[in-house]
Image (cartoon, rainbow, N blue to C red; front, side, top):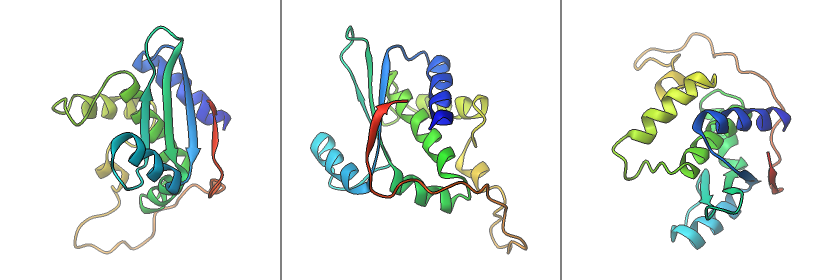
Length: 159
């Protein structure tokens, strides 16, 4: 968890997020509940951000589904920690006021630049660079081995 905390500190500085950020690492079931409660969407999602009102020293909260992060990391041949870092970055951008649903690609471009500067894969294409359509892979790419994240426990706190 320390490496995630260090990552979040670096990302917050680069984005300019001021104030405390709480992160909830939780299950898909809890993410479904939160998504329904706050966005009226009855489906789990990988990350949700909840900006705090200005002036209270809190930038906001980020909720991340470890179940979805683990599945996505396996599909992309990455560690679950790297997937969580990508989701933290995405959540921090929302806390900073970016909105990919309304900003004509501004958030996406910012996220791509930050992924590169923070040492993360910069796009889905890069994340799957060993895949070429119509060509069989002769050797499975090596994946860094890390312990699996907890499957159902929720952990909230400041990273």
